[in-house]
Length: 573
View 1 (spheres, rainbow, N blue to C red):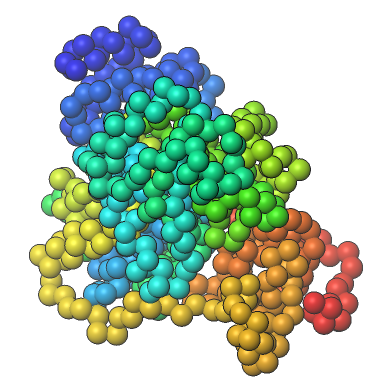
View 2 (cartoon, rainbow, N blue to C red):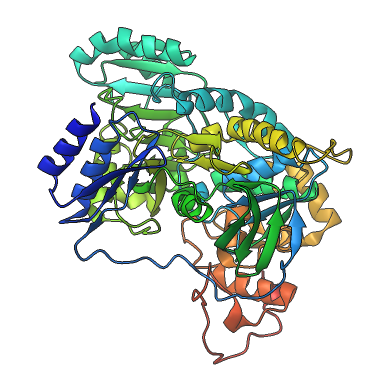
């Protein structure tokens, strides 16, 4: 659309008080509007331009300011340290890039403002490895999704995380949707995704428990599932095994540049020098780009709510099932019924725009809509099966595509931004491409060689529920701690918890241990095992009970001692 027509449309449809300009080959919007819906609408209109992106600085009346810093830590632990590469963000994208770069004999640092791996989007999603049907053909989303999907067998074997290629069924219940089939097949062909049409009889053979009134659908065999947080941790642990440093509770404050090149960054833990800076900050990547001086996009957080059902529902389906109207222009993959790697059923996510990047609240409206949608497909499920529900935010840009490129302004700065769904599926391929970009930047500055000590394989620690009885007994006989069950719902042992507390990325908060072992993720949601976890953390680390956190700053579970634990506490587990 002509730029003047765009400006006129924004002013006419939204507000004549909006200031519209061009900055860094992006359309920039500034001003105050009535509500968040107008902010989003203006941004989407602006995205119709041929510019690289949209910088949407619009505010709405009574908009609250978020506080993103969850630490009061300030020291000089990293002051004047020198690295070849600094990666901002310890989600699956940042950790997978770190792992790929660890193949080289270079110094790498990953920083994250939180106190653990995968605190935000990388643990707040459905774990589905999308096949690549939904992204618009020709986009980076489509390219990286399909390629990343194909890499998951290899990565799961190397990094020792669970991956199941379950396949998926996209089903419909209206006859007229059958006539859209040729268009779906054409889209799949363009993206390089294999699928086949299945009729009512075939659907019932594949998934005998779902609604018998479905008309038809598509079977996509390449769809898979993972545990997203465990996969992120696997990438991070292998990176550390290969020499990568990770610094938590470390946030970017400023960047110093010379001749359009980053020289060092200022953090709450000191000044750190680098030859290359990689932006993997998720929903905060636009803020990082602003600090560095190369912002041409805005992240608008898109929330998704998810329901987790009791494991007793796990045998109702065999794969991933979703009912759709085939509206491939919407901003969601539609959500579905997903059988997780741990045998729970997961419902969702939905998708809607919200103004706050770390607002993880859930709504009764959203949960009811998800439940109603999916119980119409699988009638055996109901609300009494719900264990818990949660939400996450997607790092959406107004152009709705990934941004993966070397900066055109700052020669040693790399954007890895706008990584919303299908970001988890795309992580393996994104990281391999960013590795190439990074090495090309470094080779222009210095001589670098392969890391001869590099190992692609991560051993991990025993996960008892995955093992046969004979192997369980062997491990327990060797170390009796693995025979003491702490979490009865998920059958997680004392030995597994101790292993992650003393791993190369120590887990010393309740949520950090939960992400690695699933302790507290069962039916009782930690009602039984939380006191035991507190005792174990205290015994293994020396951290006082009052200082043990659930997650970040201010999440203390105990504020004052009223009664001492008995000496026989550990024995009773």
